[in-house]
Image 1 (cartoon, helix red, strand yellow):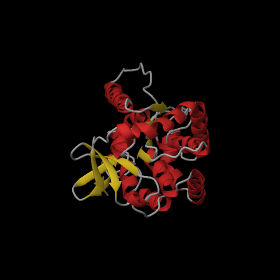
Image 2: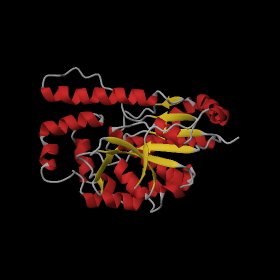
Image 3: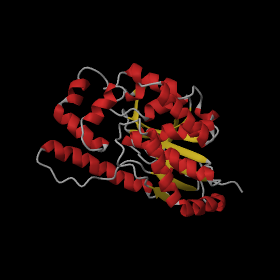
Image 4: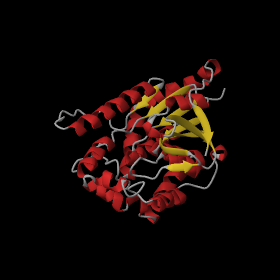
Length: 308
């Protein structure tokens, strides 16, 4: 019996390197996912693993990229990191940027803080020019189409296009535009794509969550604080509901890594390794179970699949 074990890799920017640590441990223990779904950084890590088919080549690929280019750590990332003394999450950084007028000022003159040519250069260098349907492991990337407000699974088409769309954080990175459709970061509709992995055919799904949980914020002295907090609460609750279908949710300890510091890939991998080792007995049990639950669980269609 073939396993129908799936893994869902959530968004979290630089903290997403922890996904590689989780994949490393499960592979070393004879576990190979039959399906991988990913959002944003989770989509990038999952796609590269699906392309290479093994963790050694995947990690080497990313390490070589980081050594050969400084694109991913250019001025924009340094501005983000230096804007806060503590490693904080994306929502908190957005609030600081709004107060300083950085995003408003940039939004009036351009589509994003990171120029489109820089964004494209990163993906054209990092991501192989292949189609999703040709990957060694079945994979899907989650994107958000903002004209219709729809969550979508990209299961076919050019891998670079899919990952650009899934990672296009509004205001920071340029949107991916195809005809009249405008695609942005998949995390705006699904940070942890468990159901899409089930839709692909998985009967058991382990979700890896690397985004920080809701902060204990008590300062609501101005209206902007309330607006930002309200959005954070809504996003947090949506994420909780979307993870309920997972057989297990892993939470690597990545709080010490700034979400915009992409140079911390080794620290991120270690965090994923430690988390996966701690939960390995549960992971093995779920993997073994997927061989027979796949016989009794039927595939369900949750969201629309597209090609980019």
